[in-house]
Image 1: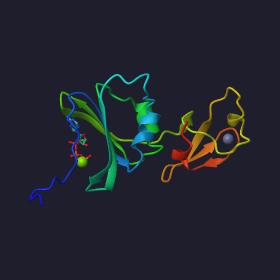
Image 2: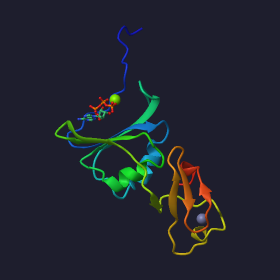
Image 3: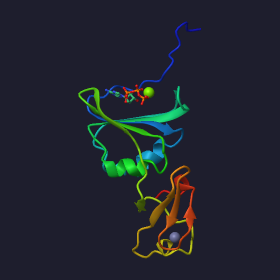
Image 4: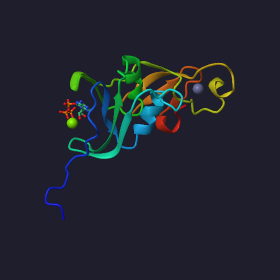
Length: 157
Ligand SMILES: Nc1ncnc2c1ncn2[C@@H]1O[C@H](COP(=O)(O)OP(=O)(O)OP(=O)(O)O)[C@@H](O)[C@H]1O
Ligand SMILES: [Mg+2]
Ligand SMILES: [Zn+2]
């Protein structure tokens, strides 16, 4: 047995970029989806920790993105699947800015309406659009059909 077991998983430090910490366990890949990161547009290294132990949350996910500072619009959207996430902007190895995500009032695109008869599910050129009905838990009201949508992470576009 190791006498000094490692207490905490640490991902590689980054010089510049963004750390998205305190992501609800299992939601890191959905956060990546919301950020719109895919094989065609990755421009720098990304480290993803899934099911990492956390004193505050028990278990959490964490993402470190090099050389990209995520904007306010994206951080509002991250709250859809990770309402307790913290965003830290790292510059020259230090945290230059840090804030908690906060869901915006209005969500356009990103997630489907769960009403199959909704105009947004009929192949028409309309993006799904929702007003935020509640933040904890996240509940969205479809602006087209009025349906209340709450299982967001199962319905991401
Ligand atoms: N240079 C860096 N490279 C990679 N990750 C970093 C760097 N600096 C800070 N972090 C990470 O950014 C997050 C915020 O940093 P901070 O120093 O505020 O951590 P903390 O004291 O653990 O804060 P919290 O109370 O939010 O958990 C943490 O997850 C930390 O591990
Ligand atoms: Mg911490
Ligand atoms: Zn609808």
